[in-house]
Length: 96
Image 1 (spheres, one colour):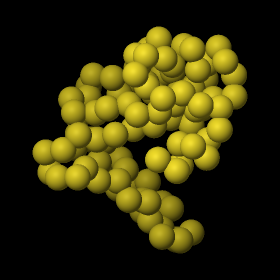
Image 2 (cartoon, one colour):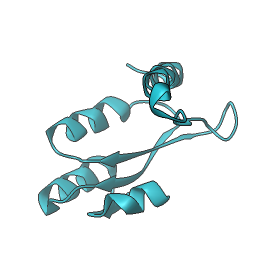
Image 3 (cartoon, rainbow, N blue to C red):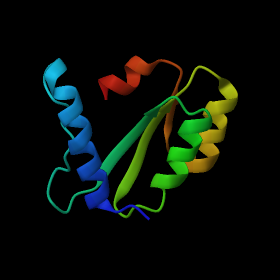
Image 4 (tube, one colour):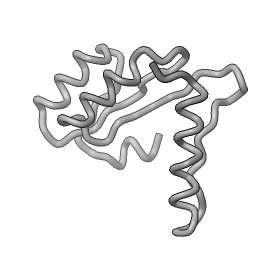
């Protein structure tokens, strides 16, 4: 099961991959003990798998999910819970 350190280490690796293309993405909690927020752009087959993988991570909160298909959005809300924001416009996720 992944924990906070695994997530942040993986994000650091992704940042290293993307850094030659421009500014590195920033993933950090507000404090060392703060919650980590996550959103999904695309909640199809792979998105569903990732949601299940990340659900057990302590202090991780799902904020939003985006998909063009109503069925995928509904399934994601069932997986995560009704409190997650759902949209078909990925720009709303990026603006958060």
